[in-house]
Length: 243
Image (tube, rainbow, N blue to C red):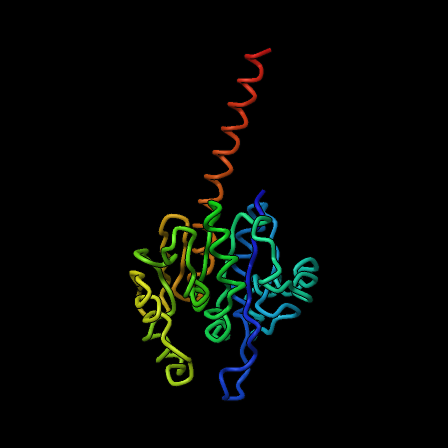
């Protein structure tokens, strides 16, 4: 079993429009189910800590309903830790949940940048979906290179922002910002699923891609578990040989 930290936005309003926002519940719920079904421990954090704002729950989606009713999840979301006080060493993976609010507080959060870089530098897995990749912006690794530099990534596209009527509200186009930082942006048609794996970085284009990102992260974590078990077996055999 591995420990996975899901990070959520703390922004509750779309710029100065007065319109409410928060993390996208589907983008949290579907990955949560993948991780939980695989036996992993899931924890939650947010930029400012406390109870993060959320978008509307789709009552017709049983996974979203289960997510919002699960007692352990409700307790974890009631008072999330601030990203800048989280110990990255406790986690094997970090998953950046989308929602338009992330466009305002993810890119400039030094705490989030340090968390993501620390997990990746330690050999962990980093995942992000839809607007979650805004948290990959400005992340520098220990080798001095940008995390997204030269890597293939997916994120909410310019066309999807236009289709959602958000192109005049968002502070920047996420796909363009990622490309400015050296990323190779791959995409599918508007609102179609797209998941991209680049070494230990897994990204998805939109809500339809959320579960897919988690499944690819799970494959990478399974490889780590397999390797750890092989190493343990090798050590045990070496110890028996000594005796």
